[in-house]
Length: 353
Image (cartoon, rainbow, N blue to C red):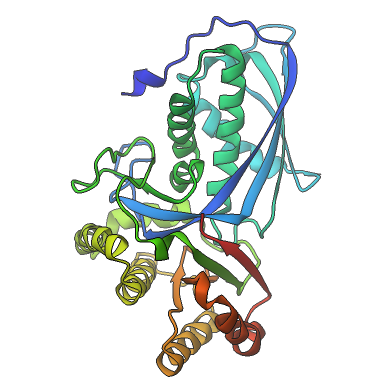
C-alpha cells in the first residue's frame, strides 16, 4: 500500500512558484489516543471526527528550485507574519518521513507562511489543520508535476502524508464525518489514511454546531505527542481500547437513527475517558483547568433543567467544545453568553461540515 503513493523523481515544473491551501481543524467524537510501538503514526484505535468550517489554517508554500544539488531540506517558517525557527524541527522531521513518497522536495528551497483563525497549541487541533494544509500544498505541487493526477488519489495521498506529520491531521483532509484507523465495522477504514464516513447519517447530524469555549489560550505544558507516548505504559490502556472500539460500534447505530441523547452521552463519555487516560499516565498530569470543570457542571445543570440537546467534548487540552443541533442554536447561545462566557477567554463559533 505504501508504494502506491511513491513518486519517482523525474519531472518538469516551473523552478519557482507558490501554492496556497486552507484546511479545517476537526473535533473527534471517538478519540484516538496512543500509537503502536515501533510504528510511525499508526493509531491504537480507530477514530471519527467532524471537520469545523470556521476553525482553520491557511498555508502558503513558496518554492524555489535549488541552484545546485543538495540532499538536505531547506525550509523557513513564518507563523502569523513572524519567523518561527522553533517550528522547523517538526517540519524537517515531517519532510524526512515523506521523502520516499515525495522525493522532489529535496530539489527545492521552501518558505512556509501559515496562520490560524484560532490559538495555536492550545488543544484545538492546530497540528491537524496546519499539517493537513501543508500536505495539501505539497500535493498541489505534485499535481503540477503529474497533470493526470486524479482527485481521489490526490486526497488519499494528502491524507496519507498529513498523518505522518500529525495523526489527526489525516482526518482534516475531508469535510464532514471522517474516519481514521481500521475498524471491522467500517468498510474501507485503515491505519494509513482517513476516509469519509461511508454509511447513512441521520439529517440531524448533518447540521450540528460546535461552539468552542477557549478556557486557556496558552500552549499546553505537555504536548499531545508526549501524551500519546505515555499510553504505552498506562495500566488501563487495554480497557480503554476495548471501550473505544465498542463506542465506535455504538456510534454507527446512533448516527443512522438520529438519537441525540445517546449521541451526547457517548461523546461525553469518550471525552472523559480520554482525560482519564491522561490523569492515570506515568507521569500523570491534568489538561483540564478549574474553569473547564465549571463549564462541564454548568452544561449538565442546564441540560437537566431545559431538556435541550447540548453536549460537550474535549480534546487534549483545557478548552470545551459544545455540540448541539442548529435548530436549538438561538436558545443555547443565550446560555453560553449569559452563563458560560465568564469562564473563558473567548468563544469561537463554528459549524460541523
